[in-house]
Every structure is written in C-alpha cells, then in structure tokens.
Length: 149
Image (tube, rainbow, N blue to C red; front, side, top):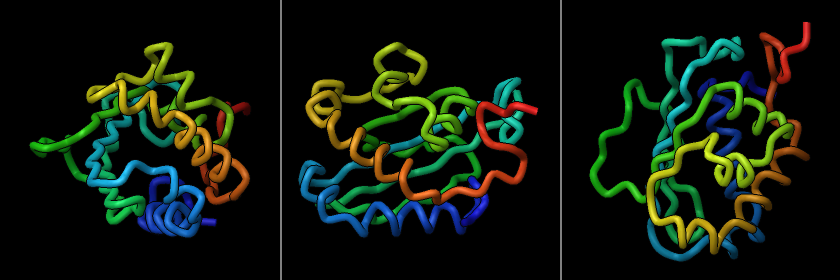
C-alpha cells in the first residue's frame, strides 16, 4: 500500500479507477477536466494550515487519462469542475469515513461547474467511493482519520 499523496498513491488510484469496467460504463462519454484543491487545516497531519495540495484529473470516454499532483493551483482554461475543501475532509473520504456526495451537498466541499451534470452522475461518485473504501489502497504513515492518538 502506498502512502497517501505520494506518486505511487496517485498511480495506484489511477490503476484502480481504470481497472473497473463498471465504473467506465457509468462515466459520461466525452472529456472532463477536474481540479482538486486540498486546503490545509488544523486537523490534518498531511496538509497543515497554510499549505495546499492540488491535483488534476483528466477523464476521456470513461477512463482516467491523467491523475497528477500539481505544484500550484491549477489555472487551466477549460476545466469542467473545481472541487475545493479541507484536507481532513478529503482524507476522511479517502479513509471511507465521509461520503463525498454528502460533503458536496452540505457545502463542505465547494464545487464549481455544471451541478446538473454532477448530480445526474452522483451514483458514479458513490460507486467510486465504495470501490476505494474496499480496496485498502492507502497507507497512513502519520495516522489515519479521525486521527485519534
């Protein structure tokens, strides 16, 4: 299991997502560009307050073509979605403790883009979330959410 937020972790996430035909069949056809912005907070040991992690997801016809970290905030024209939220929330979703749809609907995650399309494909997010939760893909070297001592 790779450590969270390492190159190996991004590669494993990409491989997992593309290994499931049931996921690819549910992704809307076409091209999707998504920026994810993980904002540091006082809870996360991986992204402290004042720091950020940014990554880019490129989906083409049901397959993830690119999943990579970025040094800075992604300023690419043509993004379909920009999803921003606290590090501890993203990490809790990765640990299977929080539902990404619920966190989007309650405003914890700020989502810019066509919400109609996103809501029409909410079942896809739930499937991806369930696959990830059952994969035991992540090693948590600094402790796993909820970060109990």
